[in-house]
Length: 51
Image (cartoon, rainbow, N blue to C red; front, side, top):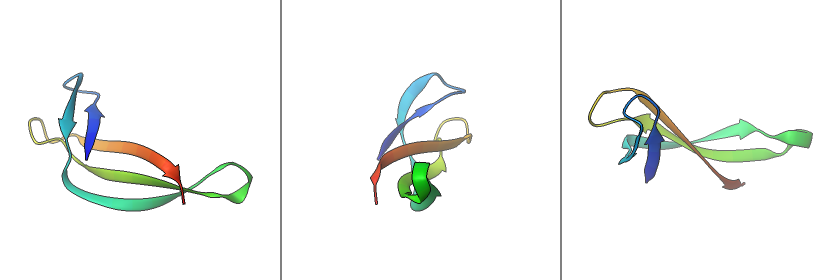
């Protein structure tokens, strides 16, 4: 999974990616991927479609 790293200002492959569920508008669940940047180690986050 590819996500945008805010610190590097570039799209990179997520290291140690895992899927999490977030609260969405109106009580719906939103899916997201979270992990770390392989270059700088910053936490990365990518919001995906609805669950």
